[in-house]
Length: 306
Image 1 (cartoon, rainbow, N blue to C red):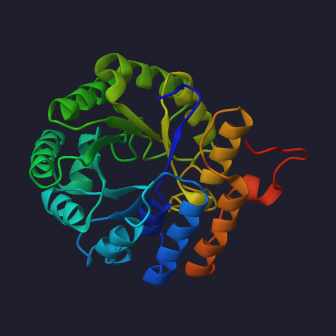
Image 2: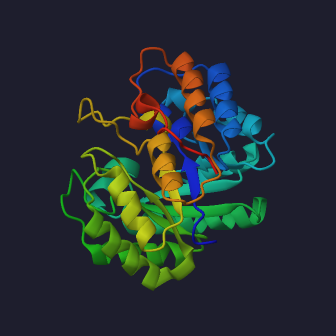
């Protein structure tokens, strides 16, 4: 990928919506996705394929994927925790699957009730299902809790690098790193992504940073500096951390796009149209707090969008 262009992967419709109490009505969800696409976003994680009784917010996953498929320039991504989810997502028409694999043994057991080794085997099985059903679909195995874990505390960097290598060996097309708990700092991000690049090269995937301690953008920039070119973020920071009141969870897409574009790094996203899409989000989740500095402040005087 050209060094001054990045891919912004909008995760609000999945990561954001599954973290809030209220369920956004399907019609509003589709309208929000339409508005996100209109801003120029080229990849959106639209749903998570998990049992509806566990996550009622995602009960309409197949329908949402089918709606998003109408846009020819959009990569429609879905999160799948296991084989069953992968089959359902592929049947619905998802074009990219992302599988969370936790670097923390404690988090892995709490989150998916499987050891890290068992999750690597799950990745292998999902890749096989992909090969059989839809060989063109990309599979990403993101390493969650890569920078630390609220249950376990420190996570050994060697464990993270080994796990990234293991999921690639199991057949994943790429593996990125997630700061699930907002514990990362820029020096650590630089160091760990450098080690992952040294291990798996251009199969190194997205930086999925959280802003729980206010370092989300700094961590994204650190990842960019060492070669990362895909970034996960969420409109209005949707998906706030329940343990940090008043702190948004995910990196705010609007602020991330502004930072990159202001630096001359192309995202392909139109900021005024992106800010407009916040309306569709607040219509679907009235009363939900929306974060973001750029939408509040507006674009600087004399700003010319590339």
